[in-house]
Image (cartoon, rainbow, N blue to C red; front, top):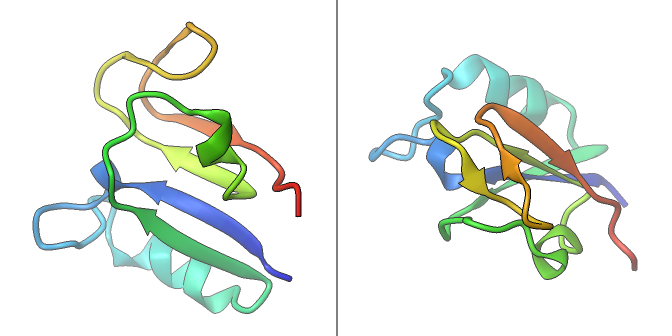
Length: 86
């Protein structure tokens, strides 16, 4: 089984390209099959346990403080991780 990383939708522009450039995604692609990534297309305002359960890690990049899980304000450019329970 591979390590699954979710990338939030705000990491991509309107053309579906990563806002941080394609080189970083190519590094993730080169790590296959040990690591897989998936774009999370729905907007995320809260990191719910249900969402976290689907991924081994979620990379969240937001421009402003957003309510994300447990009622805490989480500043932008944050990373959250959770192990799946299969």
